Image (cartoon, rainbow, N blue to C red; front, top):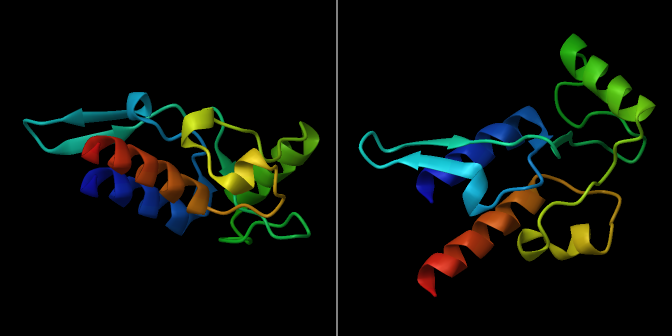
Length: 113
């Protein structure tokens, strides 16, 4: 869990939401204690109400990604139902990387159960 949460924090620092965190999208090597978050097919950049990036708005790569997301109308796509937070289930417009933290909580709960 520590390694998974570290990956989620790194993405959040960059302003990226993975949006599909689940056990099959996290590879962990017990021998080296390293993890790898995979499958970024539903990922998005966090945006404010005006559609501008929340973090690193002046970065050229971030600007290109936002423009691409606007062109193909990518917004608040959903992931795996069992790991989605209420704001994603109800299609709330202003989502943040908290959606990934929720999914981590569901994974942790399944470990405990």
